[in-house]
Length: 92
Image 1 (spheres, rainbow, N blue to C red):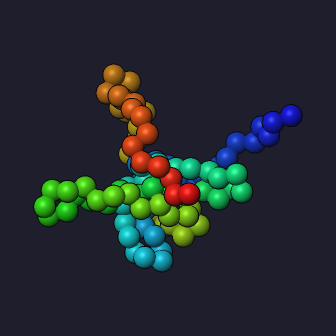
Image 2 (cartoon, helix red, strand yellow):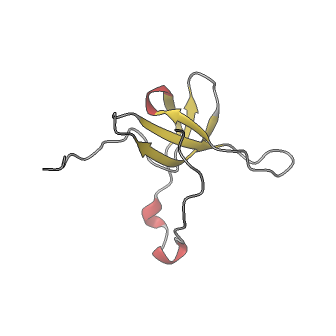
Image 3 (cartoon, rainbow, N blue to C red):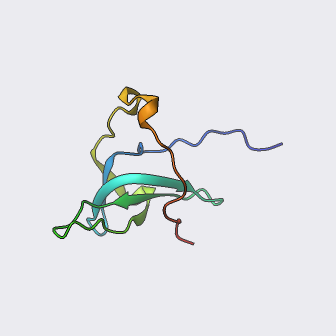
């Protein structure tokens, strides 16, 4: 029988998080759980002075701290949500 447990994540997507090892800060845009139970988040940093969006950084959940809680996504109307495909791949 398949495992029916629900994963409890420490952080909501959309939260601004900080890597306690590198001090990199970014918004959590993707989250992945591996077979071994490791949970990692992809953080996107702010647009740089040249207007470029930096690549996402993958960080293990245990080395992250919250800077700002995610906005209330329930307040966003469904018509504003566009979905979309995979934009970046988790680390292998």
